[in-house]
Image 1 (cartoon, one colour):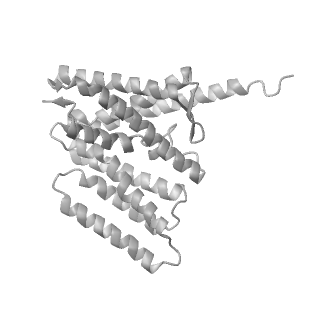
Image 2 (image 1 turned 60 degrees about the horizontal axis):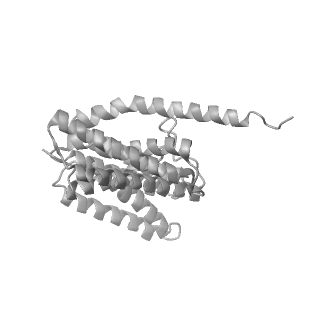
Length: 289
């Protein structure tokens, strides 16, 4: 008699159920996200991504166990929300400077007061979770604040999510060569190629919509640049947050989104893709009015 004859079938059923849960959650959240970024005042987008960054800061510091001092976790949560609100206005430099200075003073004040309990690494983790990652993620807010922001804000989502989807299916059906077997065993070179292709196709479709429905002029020569760099950035962001999970011994950052995990399980790639798209839009505009 063969031992455990149904393991393969059971694993397949489990993967299908997980995929269905992920799709249902994504479809349920998509109208909510679109309503906020496309129709509500721009400050609502800043608040939404500020809350996401705040939750992400909690996940990164508390759920991983990287920082055990609760006050530091709360400082990072508050700062993450504040950083996102910076992006809602282009005249916020004094507020940015004041916030960064205050955050620096508070963190090192804690170190001076509790130098026998805290380590500098605790401050470094808190700084990354409270300022660096929220600033990168809030690139979406800064894109939204541009003159044609409502038309361009979905671009980083298109690149990141289509790249992720293309990589998943290409890796599932054609994947043979492991790309990062220790950090992310399911990632393959074939999946990477599939992600790049779907990202480029997504950018092409997005540009066609902007051209046909909103009369934008498209710089078609830049389309592959956005697709290729965006897809590679998505993979890099995913691997960065995966290696943190490996180091801290957790499976997911949280369970906020059914089938996806926490904020940095679903939006890990956006931490790289969003600022990369922002930079590309500023240097080699994809569309012009």
